[in-house]
Image 1: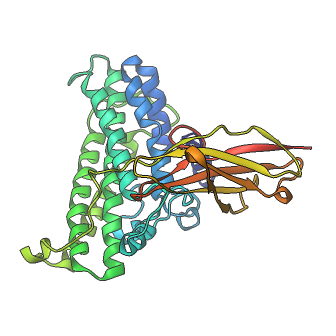
Image 2 (image 1 turned 135 degrees about the vertical axis):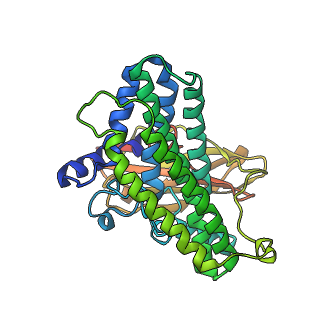
Image 3 (image 1 turned 90 degrees about the horizontal axis):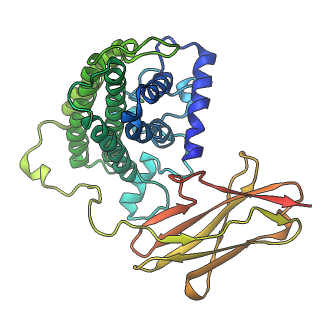
Length: 375
């Protein structure tokens, strides 16, 4: 998760450089988490759950930074009041997160991916929101100290941002499936889902207006952002009306037609990976990478993705050979392993039921491993 967190300081710096007309979300969350930490240990679990939410939203569903004039956290904070705009967003980490367009293409082709899918991201966001809400429920309906009550109100808003984007992830997939297939039932599904999304944003606006105002500091408060969120609510409501006008009231036969649905049960567990990552390697020799990969359904493939340290370099790919006891191996060619350079790599693994993932797990740390090449 550390790499995802690196997106937040970047967005904060971009916001400061631009001098935004509307207070930006990243600075609000920064202040809210700081105030909640200072309010007392009662909110520690909620702060831990809230901290990775915005970096994950940025990685999975923010608009491309050039299209957002440098900062995707400026209003509108919904990343596009119209679902057609949101559904085109590519996120800040397209290497590890499947875009909505990619998801629709994969679903139609019955394909597979090792990336984090929109429905997987949706489940994760809902899970983080549930953890925040459970921690706040433990405080009781009226926290005694004003600072605690104000911080709890801020955290409730962050949980609702997670709920909002969790639902919009699914809306965007349905909408792109409609665009790809011209299938009215997918547009109807997107419309129903967007109604639920609008309800969450309505709850967010109400939550932002509730609770005591926090002590003023150098970050915007939810009350500062409230006028912009109310305006965003009007735009979102207009978007839902546009969708309803496009699909017309559906009859029962259309409702029962086949549509894409999230996978909510069955085997969704990817393979396990055991790998000891080298810290250094000698120059001019193949860099051998070995990992033990296992899954009850069987391992479909293991791939090594690597590049030199420069972030502008694209990742090359090697299929890893299968050995005894689930040991998979590949070697970065000696000519690629240069003294004084760094090799950055990660693994893609897929089981025979289509459950894929990356190693390292980006929920546990950086999404890549770096090897320093010695002379």
